[in-house]
Length: 331
Image 1 (cartoon, helix red, strand yellow):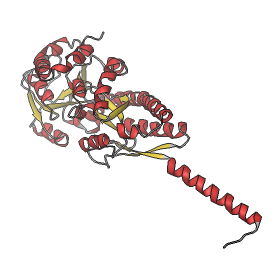
Image 2 (cartoon, one colour):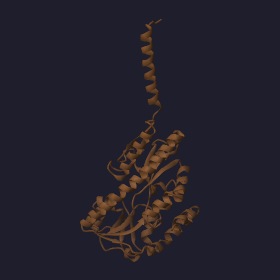
Image 3 (spheres, helix red, strand yellow):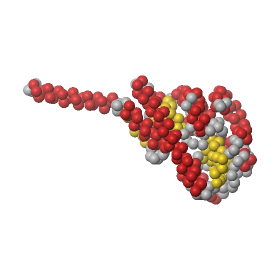
Image 4 (cartoon, helix red, strand yellow):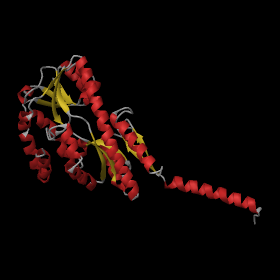
């Protein structure tokens, strides 16, 4: 049997109690693991770090988040699957590849589905975002906020594009997706799927005449050095999603869920502001480098040319007709 003086016993008891309380606090804290493909100073990355900081602050440290940038937790398709399984807690993804698992997400990959980026914000923050969000939840993913990836436009080394007929005969690199191949073919262009890393040399050597992407990608890859015509067709406006695993979401208390959702929406607003600044800076840089940037006065002919793309898509996905019409009919 062990004996101790009363004061020493009390001091020992307090020490043990304090240690146990601290241990319990650590044990009850939740650290979320986040996936991000971008570098640390990219608009998405900055907004995600802001999201993590707000969650930690407003939950009093009960929920924290560590974000793994540069795709160190795997490539995007694998990360999406890990989110669904709860292996990764949250991440930021393009809705393009999410369409492989979530049919509703494929709708935003239709060319010219959104007339402008402001209209995309309005629709994604409303009924359209809610409808896509329900599709995501059915697959184990909870959307927290809709991020901006800008608008993709055509660029080439031959001439400006002002009407669909200007695309005729051009060899255009596209992402590996049947929707994008059909988009170029509907304007009598030659769609050429290839790895993004091969585009610069392929334009330089004439394997392709051009490609399509948003201004920051066009600028940061130096494609403007070999393709001097950038035409603001804005044919693809594909939002991105800051989203969380449903399995991880359900482990949070209702109060914590509220904080996480609010922080997600706040971070989306920040990301959109940062993206707009980055996009404007990129356009100024390519113009200074000799790029001819032209606006499209009337996109209606492009939209009309996309009829075969929509017909094919809706024939294969009749259940998405109402969602497509909800977007196209928005004023």
